[in-house]
Length: 462
Image (cartoon, rainbow, N blue to C red; front, side, top):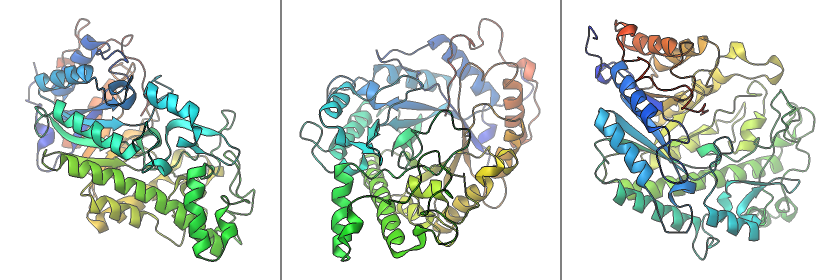
């Protein structure tokens, strides 16, 4: 038995509220809970450890799989009941993207529409389509059987709210809104990089589908420069290329500092911010009477941060350079919608980055935290690496403390290695160190019958 009662110590005034992500594929495409016994045992172990809650991904491609407007929530409701029964809190992530890794597709009917009209997807300079989520350029276009994606998302929100009303505000305390690739507010600027590349390049702008060009063209014509509206930058490098290879991102004399560069980057970023504003506003108005916190995730594009142009941030849609804080407008958008920012990468240290990428995750985390604090927007942290150096836990603690402390952290995520002897003792020590509690690890109910099976829980990434 435990010497101390640990069930609620993370809710103390000065404590950090800690959540753990459930496996990405916790619910199958047939709407059944996968490895229910293992997940149940894992929930009990987390409760005894003192974790406040868990995060559950809810996939568009599972809940509205076959037909537009036909929802199937049974598997997710069963999981919510499991979480409630154990006494944990629940944060749900509404995912409007697909996951190749977990083999979770977009809804069948959306993919069928995309086959007939591929311009609903993001497109790069070479014409490659990114088919893991819809292009933000179609938010207000009736491309989904006569409805706009915004209308479809709203109906999804409303069905979720009606179905999960017994849990909202009690068990379910937060809802993350999927805003783009991997749920993040960004363009898919690096998702098609070569697998042979070990160094992240500049990424590519995603503005070449007809709907994006139709938005760019009138802006350029209004400035009297119609040629600026025909495409994206002609002198930008490719996905894997160094940003210093071509002219656009060069530190000295790069096109990003010209009048054209400022025009294009301002427009490109504004489209992303408008998209985030649209979806977070929709979610806030839908759930405003549900006593839940609305959240959205921003990416941590930390490669090449020590160069002047910050090229991976620019191609991802963040107009952030050495002379411009591109996160102010983003954070202000979150503030307008009373939404919280989820910031991944709090486990990353500059010491473990490749020198040739001029990366600095610590500096970027600090910039986003500082900007958020200035605008009065709260931050929830996440780790980025499922398995990394042991120092990752120390880096997380560093980011959770101090005058810009984060009050909630979600550890991603439960999987085959999470409860293993190589990982779980380190995680337990991390939890204990956050709140300076002493307890006996061996007293946790981790016998062979109850412990989550390493075979049954597939390895997941954030």
